[in-house]
Image (cartoon, rainbow over the protein chains, first blue to last red):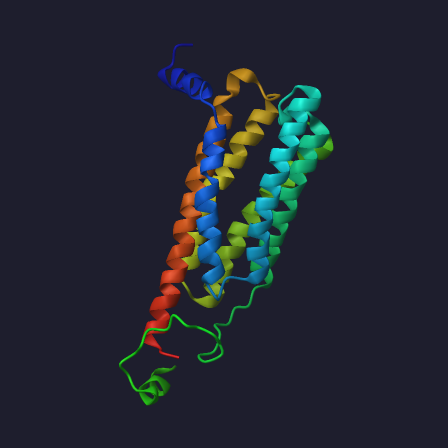
Length: 133
Length: 105
C-alpha cells in the first residue's frame, strides 16, 4: 500500500489539529460580526450560530475532563462526547428553525431606525420617494 | 463503530441532517427574498458539512489512530468553512449597504 495519496494522508495524520481548530475561531467571530449587521439575517438563526460557540466551549471543557479524569481523548469517552455534541444538535436546530421561520419581507424604507451608516445621498428626499418601487 | 453508543450516534446524525436542511433553508430563504447573497451563504456552509462527514467517518472506524488524518482534515475544513462563512456574511452586509445607497432612507 504505497499509494502517494495514502502517504500524504499518513503525513496529514501526524499533524496536530488543535491549532487549526483554534485558528478557525477567528473567521467564525468575523462571520458573527457581519451577520449581526445584516438586517435581513433571521435573528433566531443568528442565535443558533452563536450557540455554536457554546458548543465549542462545552467541547473544550469536556475534552479536558476526558483527558484528566479518564486519560482518554474526548471521542473515546462516550457520555462526555455525546453530551458535548448534543449542544451542536441544539444550535443547528435553532439555525434551521431560524431560516425556516425568518421574515421574507425586506424592512420598509424608514422602518430601519437608528441606521447611522447611511450614505449622505445627493438626491433630494422627493427623488427617493419616486424611486421606491 | 462501537466507540460510540447508539444515542451518541443519533446525536451526531441529527446534527448533520439539521445542517443539511439548514443549507436548503438558507437557499429557500434567499429565493423568498429574491436576494442572491443567501446562495453564497448556503454554499459557504458546505465545507462544514464535509468536515462533519470526515469526523463521522473517523468515529465509524472507532477513532482509529491510523485514520487521525481525518481529524486534521476536519480541522482544516472547519477553518476553511468558517472563512467562507465570514466572506458570505460580509457579502450580505455589502449588498445591504449598496441597496441602502440606491434607495436613501
